[in-house]
Image (cartoon, rainbow, N blue to C red):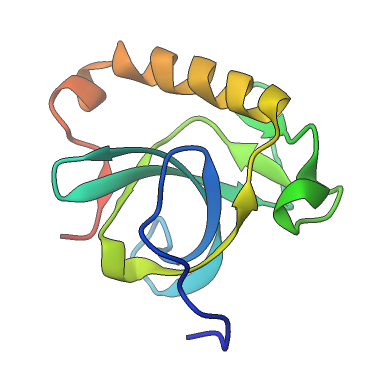
Length: 125
């Protein structure tokens, strides 16, 4: 775990460094995530990366500097992840109002999907 201390419990619209598993299950790495909500025993998050592949599924943060990220940072909006509280390492910051608005829209779209309704999206527990 990074030397930074965990700053309380993750809350919606915060950006945290967290332990996130690769899609193929071959490993994991610590990376920034955006906390969307607490749902049951898990937190619903979106992954932040610097390698956006499709404008349709990646959203460029309006103010990445607000959360200690650089200008190449994009949010992968096409799929949700579930994390347990102990998978969060430390808080990076709070999203700016413009980014909160966009993430609220993204979460609203996911709430209409079958996977969300069944609570059947990427989680490792």
